[in-house]
Image (cartoon, rainbow, N blue to C red; front, side, top):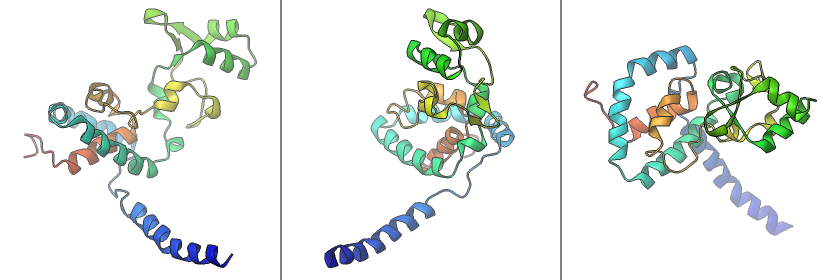
Length: 198
């Protein structure tokens, strides 16, 4: 017991130091206002095209390391439940398994749920047919624990291949505070300056 107490005492300053470091690295200039994000995105459209070329010229694994770290830091400063913008603006692909599960949660047969809430897209993919998502209540998901795989993955900044997927990421830059802020923090970290800002 005495050893555990000593171990805990020695670990406490390290844990406190880590907590202080974590808190101190959350950027103070995170933008969460959706109208401001949309406004800045419109202004920075050409800049972001230049940034795409800049990113593609870098080592992709190094870019991914930076994005993974920034995604963790930025996500800690943003509460998605206060936003819900992705639920208002994204098309969601639904698998057969998800269709069965969500129909059950909705107290409907799979066939009834599908006829009311699903559209067949290209290559036979099933898509939710409503925007905003029918499961969005205020700014939160009413089936959060059972949400679709596409919802779980978004904004997908934890996945490798940021540079390869930058075109898709750029499509969501104007609607997702996490994507917007990660891209902006990445520009700063990499000392990117567009021709317009030089």
